[in-house]
Image 1 (tube, rainbow, N blue to C red):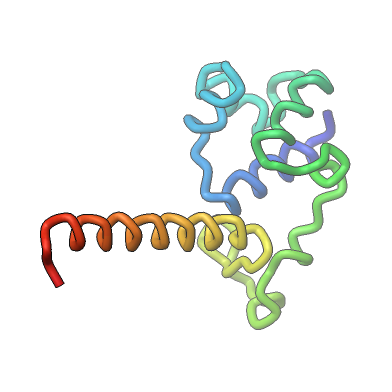
Image 2: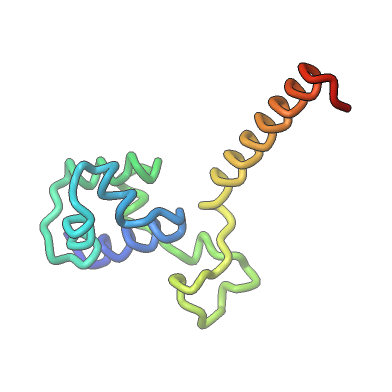
Length: 121
């Protein structure tokens, strides 16, 4: 696996706000083993790359040809701030926003249920 793919895996993981521990757990390996994948000090099979793509909810081809510039907020596109320090991201966080909206909706429904059950307004 080329170092570019290793770098892409690391960048995508960070953009998705996943920890190495989370990735290792999902892949059934140790955190140290996962770290070796990102560093390129471990050979990764195509099957493992497919597993990583599943965790990222991406196609393997999108990991291989990943281009960070497509995911940066246009205001910060020419920024010198490295990705690791929190450049704003639009596309990769849409799934997180949708999840948070669902959780908020669920919480509001539960709150209304308890209000009705206990007669609170």
